[in-house]
Length: 226
Length: 198
Image (cartoon, rainbow over all chains, first blue to last red; front, side, top):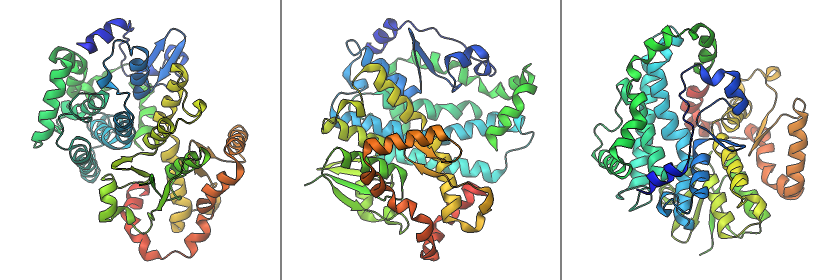
């Protein structure tokens, strides 16, 4: 598939990160923002996944099919619109549920208040509703007949909290069908490989607590949840 | 049909779009929308944007939400000078990087402080909160960040003082206009404020 081709052209160095590594001096030298993903292409360092995605499709435009990030004015606008919206919506809301379930009880030494969780779940519901009603409607993919980077960016966010016991697809046949189409386009193997680490997140709280750097990291993480 | 931009100049992303379009002499129908009056929840606006936020664009039968997407659409459609959104691979990537990051960084915090200072006077300890006006792309804290202040001046100069001031007149007068605001209209914001700050 064209996606396989573009990955083979890109000789990436996959660095396996555990919780503490983004705070290391080495990573700080690469990215002061201290977040992942980060791309290093020769001397050029780039953060922000959506920027990286556009960079890759533009750089490898010769081999990456147009439908991933169309050149057409209106189609491209739709990708940009989705990229922009999802930060504070689907992404923020699904991440919140994930973080609440995985990190908060360990880091804050407290149970999640029911009200907080209910509010977080309501937000996810609103975002999923908009994904279905505004972005997908009755189309096979967000942009229409073909898959694009928007679908990839969307699907990974919904999957994020699944390992913690929250399945955003449940009760949404339209989204399930879309997810299956996305999975088929990307290839089951690649899809599974990308999500392997995440699916083991149910034991993450324990792993976190047992890690040697937990005492050091706890105050940093606590700040995130205040 | 002329290009339509649905804007409330109280909103930072609306100001970006406004400044960008005006600076590049892109003619548009200014569709004023009052967020305070809840006009984004009207049936008509729902046909423009289900997201129910401003800014929004309508170009013929093409409707678009999200200020970043709108500005990039305008830049491409009207072939604005390259420096606004460079075609060069790496320079474009830098702009995209910033546009992506700013959603969850400056904007969110700037907005919170705006709400605290202007829309919820009863929650403020006036002396403790320095006034931070959240402009698009940057936060202005004049006395404490001289570097940002100098940058703000450069942006203002490049855009043109007249256009810059015009776009910001509503927001800079926000504290004054709060005094004459109908407090019953604010009730719709109560749940949001409670969630954000309590």
